Amino acid sequence: MLTSKVHHSKQRTPAKNNAGVFFNNMGHKITECATNISKKMFPPKYFKNDIEEYKNMKTKPVLFVRHLTKRYSKRSAPAIENVSINVYPGEFHAFIGANGAGKTTSMKSIIGGYVNWSGTVLINGINSNLEAAKAKIGYIPETPRFPAQFTSFEYLVAMMELSGIDPKEAQIRATRQLKLDGLWKLRDVSPNTFSSGQKKKILLAQALVHSPNIILMDEPVANLDPQARGDFFRLLTKLRTKGVSILISSHVLAELDLYFDSVTIIDGGHTVYENSKEKMREEAKITHYSVKTSNDVLLKEYLRKIAVQYHMKKENKCINVNISNPSDLIKIETFMSQHKISIDTFIREPVTLDALYKKMVIKGSVDTMKKKGKK
Image 1 (cartoon, rainbow, N blue to C red):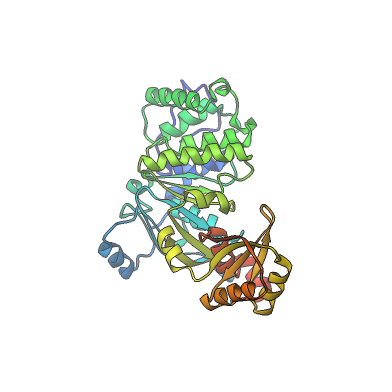
Image 2 (image 1 turned 60 degrees about the vertical axis):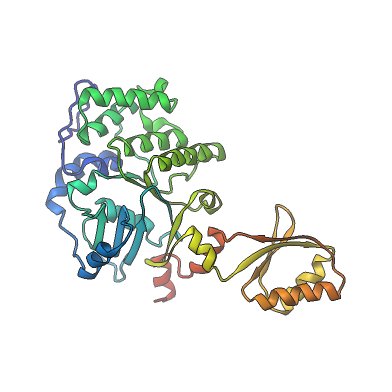
């Protein structure tokens, strides 16, 4: 197991263990997790219908989650209950919800960070508790924490060795990765001193050391400036072209809109929506229009009169009109014609994650539900 005393990377040869790469982001707790996990781990309760469903799927997902439930001690309500997720090969899957809705709990249960949960979790059709499944999954936590004694080079080498990579090969790969990320000059510096963007690059590098089929990312662009976020998403796009699946949670929905292939929305600890981008837009009941006219004041008065929701878009000063009933669109067009209101802009906008989020997220966090007495 890893010892608390840190040596130079050439001398350090961590023993392989059942925790592997999935606990390397716990920072100073890496040793504790690596040594104790085997005592706590137990196989999840399988549901026959879940397994049957998986077997009957024409296209098998890389990540298959059903009835995932996790309870914390001293809490009456479960943190998550009956969560379901499908992530397919090479797919960029958005996992969104309010703070406290259960996204992090779900991810930590999937990777083995929590063991006291129930449900069905399969990685490439394999029980997620088995080593063969763990070897196919990578993880980036929301808050980067690294062992205080490790340099960035030593950290990457140690993570690779924990994943079963030969020590010499680990040093070669760590060198190559740090140079690719523009961090070679910081190889002898603790990653704890890095900028947020640099820390994310180190975390992404360690998540990829064992060539996983899927990477789970918990708010990976939090606290990054626009340039760093753009760079990070470009890296993810390259991974997707190589067939790596990505499950990502983020509150930056406008950026996710540019990349996602499918989405799962979790609200109050429950899955409330699952769909592909294509089907999501086909099934959307609300159509959004950006409208700018010669008399926006009069138009807004009419929208309020017929109870059609709208809001002003600051960036282009257009009225964003939400049409749920096609007859309302006819009413609006008739009204503008009768009042000789000329149209400067009238554009049908695509359905966005932000609009879907506002529609589906009602309960918010589990703790908020409890305080408000929601069920």
